[in-house]
Image 1 (cartoon, rainbow, N blue to C red):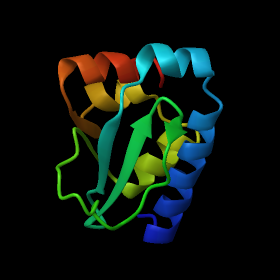
Image 2: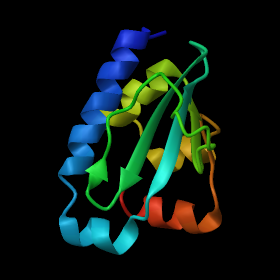
Image 3: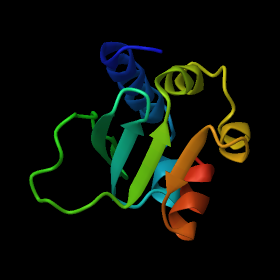
Length: 115
């Protein structure tokens, strides 16, 4: 099991990786959404926001507006780190039940093109 700090570092790396996605691809596939990433084995949830200009840094504090996240990801700490480091394939992780994503079908299809 990874620590909360290691998960925070993995999410920071994810934000950096998302910054490498071309502006053209972001414009084509991204709509603004609030994100929640629940680390199941640590009992902590990180919150972020994706938009056409990028991915905002994740925080452990829920957004002040109180609106729920439209995209909710549940993953173990070790799987999060493996996923961000490219050691775990998102498609296989989803099919194997290691990652759960609660989002609309449209959001899933758009995000799939970016992962």
